[in-house]
Amino acid sequence: MNFDIADAQLADLGRQRIAWADSHMPVLASIRERFAKEKPLEGITIAACLHITTETANLFRALKAGGAIVQACASNPLSTQDDVAASLVRDEDIATFAIKGEDNDTYFRHIDAVLDERPQMTMDDGCDLVSRLHQQRPDQVAEVLAGTEETTTGVIRLRAMEKDGALKFPIVAVNDADTKHMFDNRYGTGQSTLDGVIRATNVLLAGKKMVVAGYGYCGKGVASRARGMGAQVYVTEINPLRALEAVMDGFRVVTMDEAAREGDIFITVTGNRDVLRKEHFEVMKDGAILANSGHFDIEIDLEALAALAAGERRREVRPFVEEFLTGGARGDSKVLVIAEGRLVNLGAAEGHPADVMDMSFANQALAAEWVAKNAASLTPQVYDVPREIDQEIARLKLETMGVQIDRLTPAQEEYLASWTVGP
Image 1: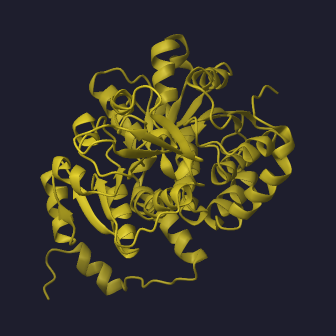
Image 2: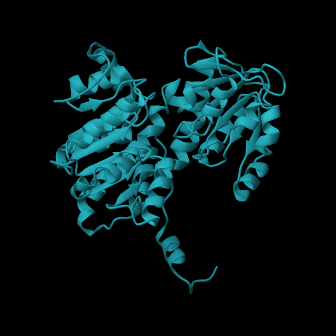
């Protein structure tokens, strides 16, 4: 088995941590148990470009139990947990290509390594694997039955491919399932983003002016958690509906030009590029902290920031924290960037809690089963997760939490299905 990991001797620690996550992922565990009996993915090679974490390891275990041959690589150079990668290789016999802190060339070499195994299914987080397959390996595209996509940024890229007629096989947008984006993006991102900021800086959030760029589900989660910890939260948006929602939720909505002068901590969660730019860096307070929780490291214009701090004016001041002396309008000001502008929750912390990834990866596993069964009838487009899968995952999660809900009576079912029955 081919693999490329940092340190095989970390496997014992990885196995222990994977087991801990597994104990908090009962829905995925129940799917793994069924998969082991039914083998719905028998013989299918899956190229999985995901964050190599304890939670993802349990997804891979479920896919393997279902009969899949899993080839794994990292979807972000800073998100890999090296002990997990070591355990995947040793304990699960899963070919893994991931090293925390790998450079850009190694990152794409690892993607190529999993594609070298000629997969019939893709499982992506950000669309880098699917994009590389279409652009650099077009001869392989016809071999792929279908794929799944984990995150908002990836779905945006895939819909652009679909619109341009460039997408050559069907993809299920796992991110858009209610049991994914309403919980993972909001509760998971909200908690893990602040966890990353606090671990990296040990800063007190209470009383700080925090600027949250973007008020989608991720932004809502970050803003609400920050307010709960005592921060004064500002929101910036380009979408009038989301901006209005933020106002109604009690947040102060401002432009980034205004926020740049006021903020102590800036967190970008937009899925777009250059959200924080040169004109913003130049007016920021001394000691402003910048972090990104969007998928790619382009939300903060790091090239412009580096240019402002040219020469010996840039240094690491804590693990995962880099200081830039900008020399802006207020004189020499320090701007601090966490985790190289990459995903702060995975670059400087452990990512989402296992309890919420339980639902996200249950969606991945069941979506993989669904496309394996239905690939022959699917066309090259982006599909939503079938509603029945979403509902079943919610039902299973409630069951594991010991929560019971009501059921419609026959009379209620008849009333809702009829247009002739009155009050």
